[in-house]
Length: 404
Image (tube, rainbow, N blue to C red):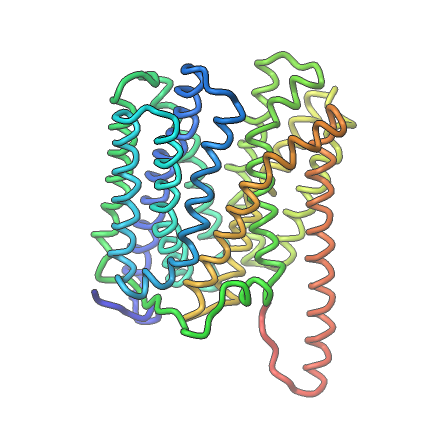
């Protein structure tokens, strides 16, 4: 394996690398975005309870978390390119085994195995993208990354819509997409940067050093899981027709797609923390306003659109700040910790949201999401004040300052 410093890359090599990474993100997004709802449909048709379907879905996140702690060591031992291919190979194999072993306990194991495989490409891809992206345009590149990934997730279910969920064919198609997602890395394998991890790096210590960044990952994961699981259900609970209740999620996803780049542009041209505060504010005000204005379709659409944009963009902005805060040998471990925080919240989000709905029907979901986002907004704003005061004090004594 050839390792190069990202500073040695030419503009053309840097552009080539970014295109390859974004292309791979879209293709794997199609596979994962389509497979998850298809498996749920298949299990429901077999009479599996919604509770068991939910537990089965959570196994992927558990697999990611259990493996991500080892990701920096595996990447260091095998190299980023080989570790990436290993992860894709595990996902590819797991998908092909689903139609061969239809017993539910086996599917639990296969979903866990998919999470194990996903951990490595996830860490490698985001670390690589952060290392190769210039600081001045990192916000916009990360916005493109999250936007393209969201497009892939949105396109994935179209396979099921066209050919259905019966038989082995959809599994073969999604496995093929996983294989295709690995191809762009062969184009840039000679440009892979150094992802060696400092022997003294501890994932917990990284999270404690930058609570704003890792808190954003948790808020993003929690909001993502809760809205996908319960937003249409909320619409039904407040009296909407089923078709309109499902449209609520579409409005939310429209913000996901269309507001990424503008928020990334703000992060590059004005302030990373300011962009993060905007996202946290949207995640606070959005669900807080929904119970008040839900009877107005126009206002509800605008609120869901802005809220959706902030909820998805917060991941990209925090990933941008991760690249600013943890350069060099800490980046791989920091990205692994970031993914663990996101996935942990992604697992906790649905049951916590379901409990909130039980406590206060139908608006408990909105109260829970607004309250968690408000806590994060307070954390981010408070850290900003502390850092601002700290920088002024250090400047007075000519001490060097560092980005958070």
